[in-house]
Structures are given as C-alpha cells and as structure tokens.
Image 1: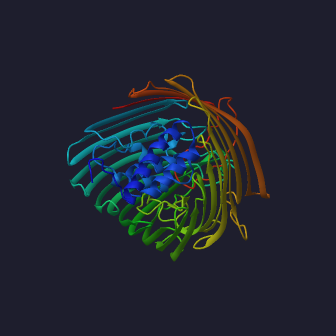
Image 2: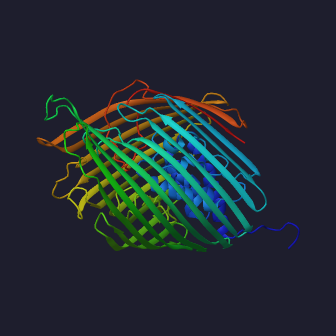
Length: 615
C-alpha cells in the first residue's frame, strides 16, 4: 500500500457509526417536536449498536412523553448508565423517579437533557429551575468530576406543587451518588446510592370520580444501592452484571367523611384508615450480547426477591364507637427469569427476529405464574427510508417495586415493558409501517392489540380476568426549511374487559382518542416557538348503583411554548402556557401506578418557566 491508504471499518464499527449518527439526529427531532422521528431514530440506534450508552439514553427520552411505560424508561436509563464512558454527562436524580407528577414528567426540569450525548470532559455541571402555576417550583443540581480512570458524580433535586382540586400538596426530593471506575478500556465498575422522598395524593384526573382506589395521602421513602460491572472484551461483545438492594417505607392514609352519623347529634363522621408498609428487596441481573456479521444475539437472566410487612390501623372520629383492632400481614415476591433474543439479517432489506423468555413469578397476593413466552418478528426495508415491521410476542409484568431491568424493553421496535399490575401476562400483535421522504418528511402508522390476563381485576381474589388493549396511531411530520416544522398525530387507545363483567372499581371499558397538531417556528437565531392544538375525546363505561353508566368528554386544548438560547450559550430560558383558554374537562388516566401519576393534561390554565444551565 502507498501513502494514500484506504481506511477500512468493520461491520460492527459501521453499525456503531450509524448508532451515533441516529442518536445525534434524535436531538434535532426532539427540539422541533418530532416525537415519531425521535422514537424512530432511538429504535434504529439501539438496533445498530445495543452497546451504545447514548442510544439507550435517547430511547429513555423517547419514552418520556408516553403513559404507562415508566418501567421501560427507567430500564433504558439503567442500561445507558452502565455503558456510559468516563467524563460523560451523569444521570440526574429526578429522572430516576417514576411517573413524576408534573406536566412533562422526566422532562420537567431539564427539557434539553439529551444534549451533548457524546461530549466527555473532566468536569460537568447542570442546573435546572422550574416555576409554574399551582405554586409549582423545582430545582435540580448535578455535577461530576472525572480523571483517567475514575468519575464521581452527585445529583439532587426538590420539587413541590399544590396540585389540583382537593389533592394533597406534592413534595418530592431525592439525591444520587455515583462512583465509576475504569481499570481498563474494556472494563468498568459503577456504584450508585439513591434516596428519594415522595408525599402527596394519589388523586388523578378522572372521567368517573369513583374509579380506582379512594383518594388518599401517600408518603414513600426509598433507599437503594446498585453495584454493576461491564466488560467488553471486543467491539462486538459485551457482558453486564448488576446487583441492587434497597428498602421502601410507605404510608397510605385514607379519610372518608360520612355526612351523617347514626348516633345523635347525627353530625359528620370521619373514618380513617392508615396503612404502613416496609419492603426489602434485592435484584441480580446478567446480560450478554454479541454481534457476528449479519447475526446478533442477546441472552440474560435475573433473580428478584422482596419481603413486605404491612400494618393497618382503622378508627372513627366518634369515641363512642368501639375501637377497631389493628391488623398486620406479610407478603413476599419471588421472580426468576431467563431470556434470549436473535436478530438475523437476511440480506440488506429483511431481518428475522426471534425471542424467548422463561418467567417464574410467585406473589403471595395473587395466583403464581410459570410460563415460557415466545416472540417472533419481521422487519422489511424495501427501499431507503421505507420500513415495515410486524411481530407477535408474549410478556409478563414483574413486581411493582422492580423498576429497572437489563432485558431489552422493545422487541422488533415494539414496546414490551408496560406498567401493568403484578403478574399480568399478555400477548401483543403489532404491525407498523413508515416512509421517510426526500426533504425529511415522515409518514407512518402503527396498529397493535394486546390480550391481557390480569390478576384479581374483575373477578375477585386469586383469579385472572381477560382484558383487551388496543393502541393505534397515524403520524405525519414535515420540516419546512430551517425555520418551520409541522407535525400531526392521530392516536387511539382502548382498554376493555372481556367475558363476564363483575368489576366495579375501574371502568370496564375506556376509549381515548387524541389528535395533537404542532407547529414549530424559528423566529430568530435565539428564539423559537412551539404551538400545539390537541383534540381529546374519551368515552367510558363503569358500574354504578343503577347498573352500567356511560360518560364521555370532548375538548380542544391549546398550548404555547417559547425558548430563548443564543448559539453556543450554556444557558436557556423556556416559558409557556398549557390549556391556554382555560378549558374545564374530565379525563381518565389509564396509568395503573399506585402513587400520583404524570398528568397528560392540565384541567386549568397553567403557566411555567424553565431556566437551565450546563457547562
């Protein structure tokens, strides 16, 4: 060879290059509100290089605007942290809190979190400030220092809000410490300590006021530690080993006021129920992946154990009633799993994906599960920019308190880690297609159905009830030069109980239709604006005293946001208003989390201001 040598790169390195490009491209899509494009490039980045920490971090951000996928989001952030090189931006503590109960959830205090995914430097600092209606205020601080073989980081946040209506005030705070060691280029060790305090009401927006558990005040304190090892002996091979342990203290307080006591003087009577729970858990996970030309595979397994002690005290406000004896109970969860995934590329345009997982789940409160889940999918790319995907696969939901996992959160690009109730088994059939046109326009859609077997929901105790969930969407995104971008999306979701209907605690059917229309404008090099109109329609059916009752809601909402940031500046200011015309409406949140959930909409006009700095 002469001095003009050709530089040859292996298929694995080319895949890594594509993953890096996709992760970087996702930042631009996020800025202009192209959520479908963000989701697509995050999916492609992980497919090209599942060992990229930036790809998993981008996927975690893609989950941020979706309801019922907090387990998937937190798992992606864990997988990102284990793969992050020294000197990278550390994870912020507030992003590791599930279902943060403010609008925008994990994007609330740092909407540009995904910036600088590949930037490494000896020291990093980020701060985010949030102020808004309902007396909302939050502050997040994160810093790190790195040397050739070590990195230490610390992060803390505090968030408070008055909430809506009669809901108790929200107060959430947390801290995270991390020490990262890299004894060699192929090996890294990560240690984490995380603490969080959370108080507030479980009250959520409801189409049916009586749906779900009674409104109650919930106090939750969580302490956990995690020690993880990553070893990558080659560019196409990786081992992950992660162990976690922790404890949770939780107190639920329910106060029900009866307008008339049966005893004279027949005034109001208050019934109070206070439940204290103490949970200890430990979790061990192992993951191995390798790429060999057109073939890649991932295998792994995990073992999870938890023990819970619960004590309940009940009392009436009138001392003339006899006291109620306190009760106590013990519960346990054992969950063992093993999984394997194979991705075989059959030429340049066709891929076959196969998967299997063994699940053994024993929860003393529900019927146990032991089963083998199968998965099969096909991805077809007949031309550049065109993709057709189809898959059918089975899943099972583990323990409520197990929020992180090393297992892939998607199969063939379709979500498989849902926030279902403990022990829920499901079979999902999904089809998707999209086309990227010249100039960057995107048009696509997705259709899916999930057959659910949910323990104790609609049939009593130690039984399973059949439910069906539908998720359909059609989306279009159109960039119009450097100063304007348009987006539109139609989204339909439904959850309906099948077979004999005996459930009175939740709606037996709920159909939700959303139509968000977005416009992004670059007003000047420093100033951009985002305008959104959202049509929300919802219809539900629920048991009432007189039998089945139907309710429905339909409303148009307007949102406006402005962002100011000079090129190359390390700070930004963002302000906006949600529900601009102060529309009053009811909405049933289908998120099954026990604590306060991330709201999808605000039932009154809400103004916010965000300030961020990073260097």
